[in-house]
Image (cartoon, rainbow, N blue to C red; front, side, top):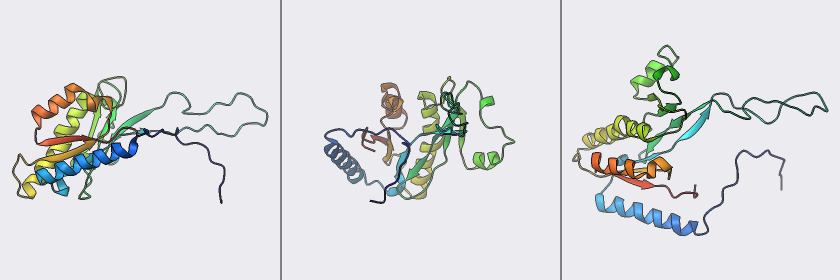
Amino acid sequence: LNWSPHRATRAAQKLPHNHEKIISDSFLHEAYVFRDHGIPAELHVNTDQTQCVYQQGSKTTWMKAGAHQVATIGSEEKQAFTIVPSISTSGEVLPWQAVYHGETDRLCPRSNCRGWAEAKKEGFRLIPSKTSMYWSNLQTMKDLVNKIIHLYFSHKQEELGLDKDQQAIWCIDCWSVHKSEEFLTWMKQTYPEITVIFIPGGCT
């Protein structure tokens, strides 16, 4: 079979027992929105978020034969930040948002870092979470929409000669803050032209 031993890289994810129906329903829902609102590929954006570890640890290292206590870096607390990338169906990569733990900008990359000026020029957002965690929260999500998602959609509406109330689709994960009533209410009130569609949980 041409197999070889491999260390696990992630926990196995169990698919919902009715995952095929869930995915089919999600596809039909999205197709319905596309059809009824005449949404072009440029106005269909998918956003994800992922942990980015500064120094990836390992459970394997070199030690004297017979050693019983072996320490490795990164096995316990991780030093990381969250990257929030977005891409449109037309293939355009939007500026990224990076979320760092902490209350102030002092915990974000400094202006003298290599590539900082280019990132700012391209519209990248390097922001503190204002909490002890580096995951996205309500405030960072609002920043993402205000400074990246909405600006991109507005630019494309103008570029394509579309009305400002032209509907757009924004696909995001079933993350707790994404599904929160506060965030969804804010989206409906602030950007009614953006239809939020969730990627089915546990199906990716």
